[in-house]
Length: 237
Image (cartoon, rainbow, N blue to C red; front, side, top):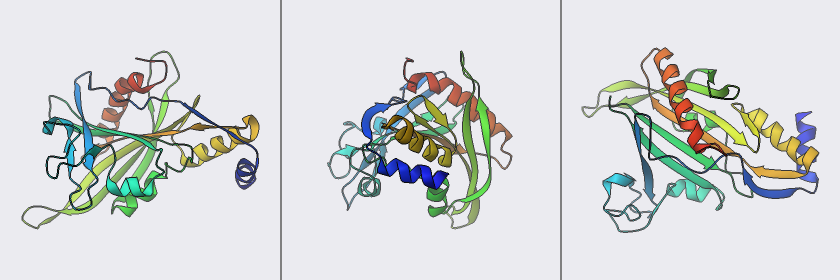
């Protein structure tokens, strides 16, 4: 059925719409969190990464003077040119740090990939995964996929140690949300077949360090996403 749906999806006359189910926006602050945009130099000999607050001019590389962008050079070379992307690094008074990104597909709809594949390609090993419920006021819970990952890193002295992170994500289309990549593909195909339309889908991720136990991380993700969601949802402020 999935193969048939995808076959039909690419064969029917589809109207491509610029509408999305989420805003390409991340607040400067909310709750106890303060965020700064992550900026990238795409000069092939530089490729520095900055937080916007580290620079006198947040649009200019402090090293080579070239313009700064919302995605890295490798991402710009890989992704369709009309891909929307925004990243911010958030910190709270306790010193905890979380990175948030939004990737918004363009007309080619090839901007979003299965996160597990990208993470393993970057050297992360998947320890576990689960879908968690995030309670939101005035509506049903949001379901978010949480990946607990680890990899071996070296300290300044060269000693190897295990680095553990969590990676939480979900996908948003027009009037649709899912934590499953295959369900996103099915819903995209269904829109093409039953509605003859293709909307812009978004991929939202939240990443941060974790201890060997994932319980505290899960609660932190649920609280963080619950506070962030109204700022990025269509129709909220």
